[in-house]
Image 1 (cartoon, one colour):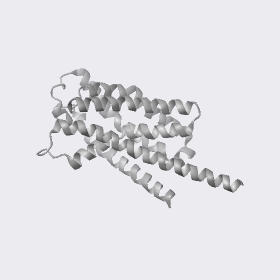
Image 2 (cartoon, one colour; image 1 turned 135 degrees about the vertical axis):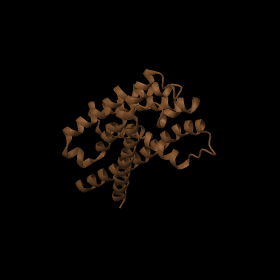
Image 3 (spheres, rainbow, N blue to C red; image 1 turned 45 degrees about the vertical axis):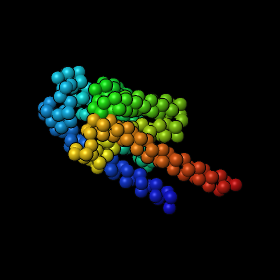
Image 4 (tube, one colour; image 1 turned 90 degrees about the vertical axis):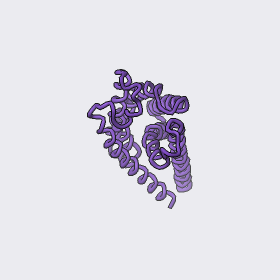
Length: 223
């Protein structure tokens, strides 16, 4: 029953991530007009005249959905067994997307984040943590430590999906009449990160417990 429960949770989580990734893609599509007075950019009028900031903004928003979708395929055991070569290719796309494109872009964007000092520090810590977890995952698989690689990829993907959690929290709880936008924004940056890391921790704990039980059964069978 516990195994079934874990599978249901994973399938539900993957479905929700896919759904919100598609919704994010719809939101991102508005920026293909390169209009500087739409969507999120209406709150960033003080920096939209900076060509470097704008370049990093477009690089980030047009690549992050690929990052989200690439990560989705990496946590299916069946997919990994049947498509090892494809798994490696998609994994490389995910890693390169993060380390070469999005970590540098998000670092620059984070320096000019909404939410004041709370938001800026939240984004920068999130960015550094994103890079660290992804790098550890890569070095782990290079050393042949599959379990550690998988665990750190789960943590890395938890940071990747903070963009989704951030928007969910904002849509559910933000009330313009009752909340200060800057304060709410800054606190939401931290909330999204903590929520996702907590979910990842629960998944890792359940995976560890499940692996322990399977190994115990195998040992009992041999004896």
